[in-house]
Amino acid sequence: MKELDQLVENFLQPKPKAFGLDQLVEMVEQVMEEAVDEDAVKAVEAFAQDKGYEVEKKTDQILIIRSDDRAVTRDDFIAATQPGGELEQFEYDRKGSSMGRIFLRGVRGKTRQLSVYFKSTIDTSSGGASGARKGKEYEEKIEQLIKDIGDPDISTDTAGSGHGSDLVIATEGKEPLTIEAKTSLGADFGQFRVRYNTVKNKWEATPSKNYLKHKLTYGRIFKQLEPRLAQISYPDENHPNLRKDETYILGLADKEGTGELKRQLQSLWFNGKESEYLPFDFAAIAQKYANKGDKLIQIMGKGLYALDPTSAKQYGVPLFEDAGLVGSTRVRLKPTYGEDSSHSLVLANKVSGRLKTSPMSLDNPDDLQNIISIYKNT
Image (tube, rainbow, N blue to C red):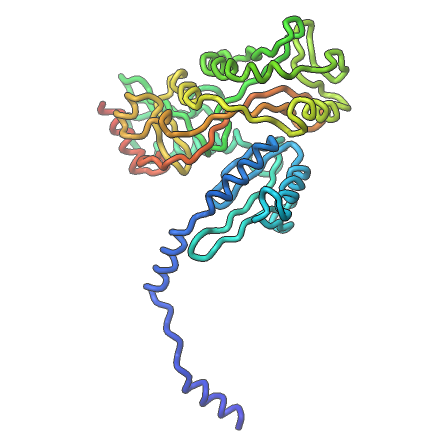
C-alpha cells in the first residue's frame, strides 16, 4: 500500500520546468562574461619575476612557471600561499600534475578559476614538444592554411627554428612578404649569450652568427644592461668548473660539481634567485624584426600586427611598437641539459603586458585570404 501511495504522490507533484534554449544561452553568456582576476594574474607574475622564474601564459586560465628546479619553485609558491604570503588567496592542490598546482577559485558570475603549474626550462624532448618545436608546428599550420587557399600565383615557405623569417609569402615580380610568428607573448623574443673578458674585466656579447645578424638590436639592449652586468663577475677565475680560453670565461664546464658552482654564483649574482629580470625599451624588440626585413608579426591567439608604419597602413593592422608592452631581459645561467652540464650566461628578451587583440589574424582563413589579396594587389 505504501508503494501505491508513493506513486500517486509522485504523479501529483508539479513537474520541473524543462531546460530550455533560453536558459542554455543565458548560462553560456554568463560564462563568457566571466574572466580571471587580473590582479591575481599580476600577483603571480610579480612573485615569479621577483624570484627569477619564467612565466608563460598558456591560456587565460592557466599560467606556467618555468625554472631549472621546479620542485624548489613549487615550494616557493606553496610558501607564498600561507597566511600573510604574497599569494595567500591561492590554494595548493597536489593533484593534476607531478608537481601539483596552486589555484584561485572562481567566483560565480564574476571571475573564472586561475591555475598555476610548474614546468622545467630544461628541454628533455621526451614528453611534449619543446618551445622550438611548438613554434615550427605553428608556422607549418599557417603554411598549410595558405596552401589550402589554393592560389596558383602564391608560394610559401617556413624557417622552422632557424634564424630567417618564420613565414614567407611570395609571388612572381614582387618582394616577398616576410612574417614573424609567435605561439605566445611568453615566448623568447630573441636571446644571446655573453662571455667574461678576463683581460678587460668586463662582460661582452658573444659574437655568434645569430648575435651578429641582430647586432643593431641586441647591441642596443646589451648597452642598456651593461651597468648591471658590470656589478657581477666570477670570484675565482681559475675554478676547475669554468669553461674558458686565454681571454674569455665562456661559462660553466660539463663536469661534476658544476651544479654546485651554479648555485654559488646565483647566490652571489642574483641574491639567491634563479635569474634576474632587467627592463629595457620594448621598441627595440619591434625594431629587431623590422631590421631583419619582416613586415608583420603574428601572435597566436592575439592576431596580426605590423612592424613598420607602412605595413600597418597597407594591411590595416595595429603597429606592434605601439602596443604598450613592456620589455625585460631575463639574465640567467642556462644549462645545456642538466645541472652538471655546460652552462652559459644567457640574456633572453621577454615582453609582458596586456596585448589588445588585432582585428586580423592569420589563424582565420578569411583574414589570411584578405592579407594575400592585399599583398598581391598593392
